[in-house]
Amino acid sequence: MDKKLEEFIKEQRGSTTVKKTELDCKKFMTFIQRKYSETRSLKEIPPNILDIYLSHFIMEVRKADGEGYEPDSLTSFRIFNSIEVQVLAHCKS
Image: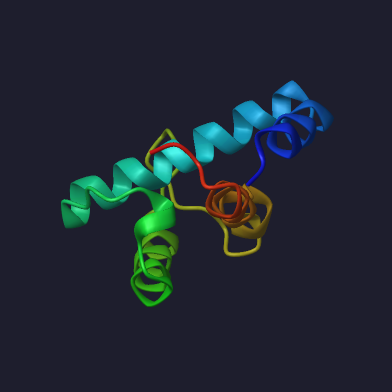
């Protein structure tokens, strides 16, 4: 992606959104590093493998207190949107 375009997009997002995206991706990357010893960045993981990782993440993700999320609340977790943003923007690993 063109650097100017990348900067423009980043400037248009609120700082809270950028931080939330980074936090969500960090949670997911930590999960796949621990569970699968994955060392590739999100943009390097093939879609079929990423699909498997996301499926397992959904089944195993927990709140800070260790409780599971309600199924409907996972959609508001926004991890999927955050990962999509990172992959499409060729995120840093």
